Length: 237
Length: 381
Ligand SMILES: Nc1ncnc2c1ncn2[C@@H]1O[C@H](COP(=O)(O)OP(=O)(O)O)[C@@H](O)[C@H]1O
Ligand SMILES: [Mg+2]
Image 1 (tube, rainbow over the protein chains, first blue to last red):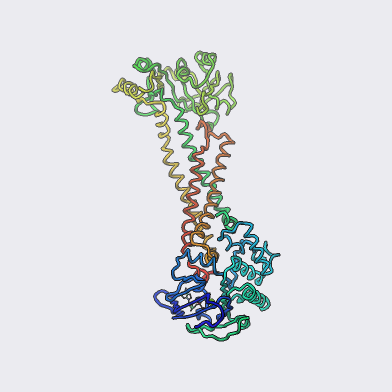
Image 2: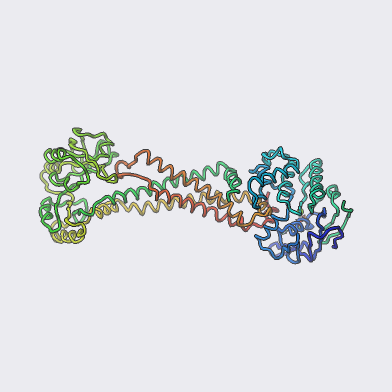
C-alpha cells in the first residue's frame, strides 16, 4: 500500500508475512503485506477479531519478528537486530499503550512513569522533572503518589500514556486503548492521543473496534484475511 | 542496579507473609548452621590450646581400661621424659546429671607442676598435696556454681560408686583465655584409698625435655610396655584430645551432614518462593521488556530480589547466633571452654545465603530472560 500522506515514512513494511505455529499446524496470519506510515500520521487499524491487527502492531514495535519480509521503523531495519538491540530500539523509539494499561501495581503513578527513564542516563533530578512534565500533559500531576488501584480506569490509562511518552519516542502504538473504558473516559483518552499527535507530533498507530475512535485518525485501514484495505482518508491538519 | 532498588524492594514486599516466612526459614537454618559450626570451631580451639610438649600414656586397648600406678617411676626413667604424673577420669555427678563437667583424680605430688598454665598460689598447691579431700576448681566452673575456697562439693560417683565429699582449696586461673577451666581436680590418693588401694590410674602425663622429640619418646614408651599385661598407647596431648573427640562419635561428619541437609531444605523453600514470585509477575516482566528493559536487566532484577531475601535471612540468622551466644556466655554445660561464633562462621553463613540467593534466583531469572513478550502479554492477566 502506497503512502500518500505528507512527510517521509516512519514505518515501512515490505512483503511481511507472519505464520504462527501451533504444534505442527501452521497458522498464516499475514502474507506479503506492505504498509507505509508517514511521520506525524495518525493511523487507525480496524478489522475483525483475529485478523492480525495486534500482530502488525507487535511487528512494528519490535516485540515480535516476521516470518518473512522487511520491517523498517525510524530508519532502523529491525530484521538485523538481536534481542538487546531490539530492546534499545523500543526504549528509544516506541511508546506502548495497552488495552489493560499494564501498570505495575506496587509502584506509584510517578514510579510507573519513571520506569522507561531508568534505562536512560538521566539523573534522579532530571528524571523527576521529566515525569512531572508528562504527568502535567496527561493532567494527573495531583495523582503522582497514587497507586494504580487508587485510580479510575481512565486515570490508569492516562498514567500509562504518560509512561509511553516520557522518554519522548516518535512512535506511539496503541492496541485498543479504550477497550476497557466507559464512553466518557474513552473520549478523554482519544482526545489525549489526538493531542499528542497534533501538538507533540507523535506518529500514532492505533488498533480499535470503535468507529468513534477511528474518526480521530487521518487514515483508517481495514485488515481482513491478511489484506489491508483503505477505508477512510482525511487531510492532515 | 541501585536505581531499580525501589522497584525490587516493593517486589519483595508484594506478598509480605510469603517473604517473611522465607526470610524466617533462612534465619532459622543459618542460626542452626552457625550453632553447629561453632561446635566444631570451639572443639578445634580447645584442641589448639592443648600442648604438644606433653604426652599422654594410656591403656592401648581402650580409655576405659586402666594402668598400674607403678608405671610412673618407670616412665620417669625413660630418656627424654623430664617428669611423669597421673590422672583418672572420675565421671561423678554434681547434684544433677545435667551439670556436666570434667572431674579428675590426680597425682597430688606432681600433677599441678606439669600444668603451669593453670595458675595457683604455692599455698593452694600445698594444701592440695596435704589434704586428702582437697579439690581445685577451674575459674569458669567456680564462677558458674559460685564455688570458693573452703566450700564443700559433693559428687555422686558413677564409675567409682558412693558419695564423695571435697573441700575447695584453690581456684585455678588460666594463663590464656582459650584454656578450658570447666573442671575439678581432686587428690588422687583419696580415690586410691577409698577403692582399697587398687593402684590403678587412667592415664599418665609425661613432660618432655624437647617437644620436637615427642614422636620418638612416644614410640619408646610404648615399646617399653609392649608384651606386658598392660600395653600402652602414647600420643601428644593434642592427639589424645582429638581421639577423645572422635570417640565422642565423629561429631564433625554428623554436623556437616546435618548442616547440608538444612541448607538444601531451605534452599528448596526459597527456590519455591522465587519461582512463585516470578511466575505471578510474568506479565509485568513482559511489560518491562516491551518498555525496553533488556534480558540482562530483568535477569538482574530477579536475581537481586532473590539475593535481598536470602541475604536478609543470612544477616539476621548469623547476627542472632552472635548475639545469643555472645550475650549468654553459653558453654553447653561446660562442655566447651568457650562457645564463640567466629567471623569465619559468620562469613560462611553469609556465603551460604549468597549461594541460596543465586540458586533460587537462577531459574526464574532464566525464565524472565527467555520470556517471549507477545506470548506473555497475550496469555496472562
Ligand atoms: N502466539 C500465537 N500462536 C498461535 N496463534 C497465534 C499467536 N498469536 C496470535 N495468533 C493468531 O493469529 C491471529 C491474529 O491474532 P491477532 O494479531 O492478535 O489478531 P487481532 O489483534 O486482529 O484480534 C489469531 O487467529 C490468533 O489466534
Ligand atoms: Mg488484538
